[in-house]
Image (cartoon, rainbow, N blue to C red; front, side, top):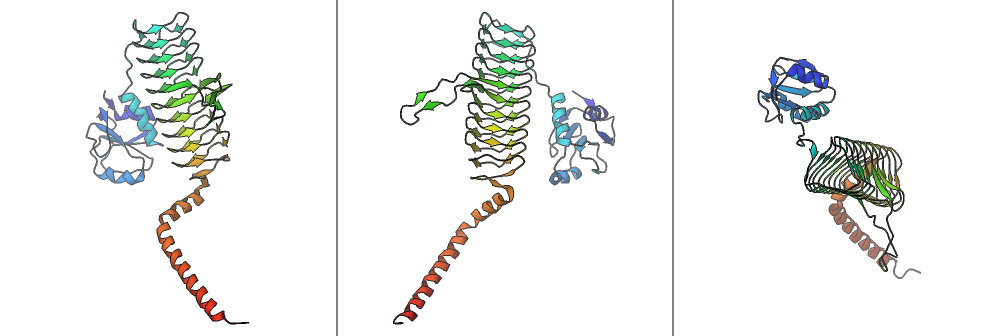
Length: 349
């Protein structure tokens, strides 16, 4: 694919400085890009590359100056870069149609405009809408639904009655609707509590590989619109995750926790159950969350601390060996002074 710089600028709403007729055929990192490649600079620490890059065109923030370079100035170069990747590297799911090697139970509805690949299973009463792509090895349980233009990659499992919205992306190994971890008398009888609720995933959600979302005990586990979840994340029964939130890998969210809108959670965060995390909260990686967090707070650690306090604690950890040596010296000095005082006061009435 080749496009002129003028055409590229029109796609992202950018302003061109330089030769807008030059044609671009690929997108590459700025340190590797050649004369026919597009690249981008968003972080100021990479501006040094503008002097030496051979890129044929560069996406840059407004006001950037680089003599003899073809620049496309946009408000958000990284977002523009992402949009152009979809143009230069469109995803090809192959021809639409239903493979004769897919197993579709009687009573299921599969749109003729969907793509269902070999060895997929679609249960009775399930619905797969137009534009959906179902890869090999996908299991869609009875009475589950998959909305328009959603993509379920290989070996995704969608348990019975789960609801998948439109334009949802489920990467390989995702499990939707497995039983929540519900047992009475845990540690002794471990009597299973039936999990009879559902999972609802709203439009434009993306879940990374091997992420799991448990069905509710009653009611629903609910992932709202435009939530993005990384690989290997566990979402327990009856959790609600508000729209536009983003959660990094290896995070675990315990049952019945409510996460607000536009929350950002770093990797390896553990969150206990039955708490509320307010809108626009930001939680640093490897934090342990044991109680509710009000809206707008930024921080991390175990237990969770506001950002400045968290930084002080983390900075102090590195100094603990030095502090220990000083404390031992002080304790010895105190013991010596106490001995002197005791000796001087012996025999006093």
